Length: 187
Picture 1 (cartoon, rainbow, N blue to C red):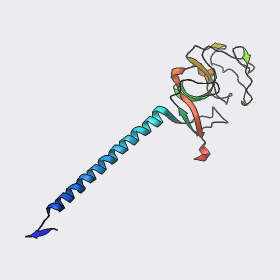
Picture 2 (picture 1 turned 90 degrees about the horizontal axis):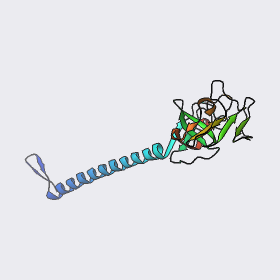
Picture 3 (picture 1 turned 90 degrees about the vertical axis):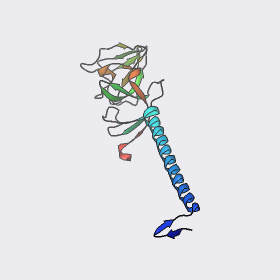
Picture 4 (picture 1 turned 30 degrees about the horizontal axis):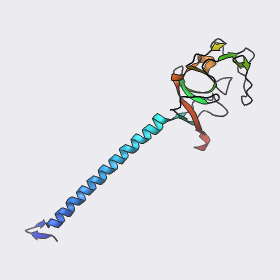
C-alpha cells in the first residue's frame, strides 16, 4: 500500500484519502461534541436558573418542616400564589423563606396576646406550635395589604424574621414557590 523511496514513505492516493476522511470525521465528532455540550449547558442554565431555583436554607425560621442546611427547590415561573404556599423571596437585603398567609386587599392583625386575624377572622393554625406575637420594633398592626403585596409568616413564629418584622412582601420580591426539600440528613 505504501511505497518507500530513498528513506521516505510515499502514500498511495487511497491512503491519503483515508487519512483525510479520518481527520474530517474526527473534526466533525469534536464539533458535534462541542455543540452538544453547549446545548446541555444552556439547557441546565434555563432549567436551574430560569424555571427552577435551588437555595440552601440558612436559618431555622421554617422549623420543623424546613431546617437550616436543607436544600429547597422552588419554581420561578409561577405568578399565582395560594395561601399556605412556602415562598422564597428577598427582604431586608437577604433571601428568605416564609409561608403565605394573606394576599393583596386583606387586613392582617396580630394582637399582643398572640391572636392572628385576617379580615377580622381569627385564624386557628393546628400545625403551628409557636405563639404569633408582634415583634418589638417591627411593624404596627393592623396592616392593610396593597394589591401587589402579600403577608408571610415563618413557621417558627417566636424567632423567625417575617412580615411582622420587615412588613408586607411585594410580588416583585418573590423568587418562587417551594416544590420540595432535600433534608440535610439525606445528603
